[in-house]
Image (cartoon, rainbow, N blue to C red):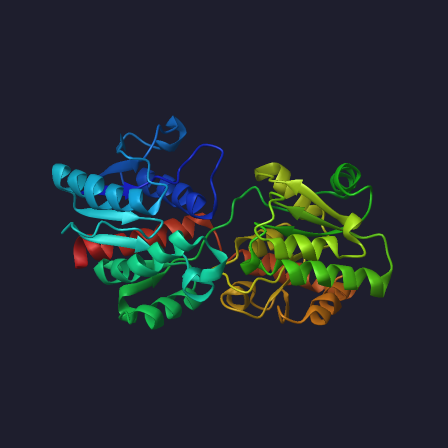
Length: 375
């Protein structure tokens, strides 16, 4: 069979959530199925490290698809022509975008529909494109894959899709994430937090991530507990709007909030495993990968009662209301109690075992087979 894959988000040293899903699942699928021919479609020069096996043919199609107008050209013209040229049996799109003119069966991986619920948190032209085209993609898709039962229910409800058409394939977690020694933790604290214990947040400074209330909760926690704890924010210090910046500048303990910039792989594992707790109280998540990464590192988690987060956290995290700053601060304080922290760590290690890339790849392949052989 000829399986064509949208791999435009496989960019060297710039893999984000969807990019990692694409990388980890396709690396396993292509090696496990040498009987099939895979075509990887890039929109720019690709790195050879993404060509995982001999049964992959890389192809660069123009134009670079980084704007709604270019999305339309790339998927509806360039991809459409290529699918016809190679007589493809399937088009797999890990970012959910599909080619509307083609008659080739297609699988759309829709990680979440945050733009339907919080359109104000994205640029207007991007929101307009998503809200116009994702309902069409959902209808066009032969099958839809998503990363949580919450997201499945959301897609079914928002787009009136038959639930039998939607498969849940959980994200996996990089094998690098694991606990570290006390000596390693001491080194990390010396390098990042002036030898102080610290809470951590990993992700973008997007309002959807509830950054303002998390910052306020840390400030309130410091006022209540009066200790030397810090708060590390792992990600770019790029204020997505004036409101977050204004909130930060109003804090009493803003000097205890430290920005590391982006960290990857081993460096990210080291700081995550050294934290006394992850704060991840988003308003909306399709999955919430940092929650499980923290659990794998034996770091207890405070997360949100909303969307997919209770599903992913199971009984291995403290849940709190994202709009209740006092509640967040109170739950942070609980993490300083050894009995509570130890119990969360034990439960977290068990919960984290449910999420691995081998399972992701197998379940994604099951969805592919439903289209190739059972459609």
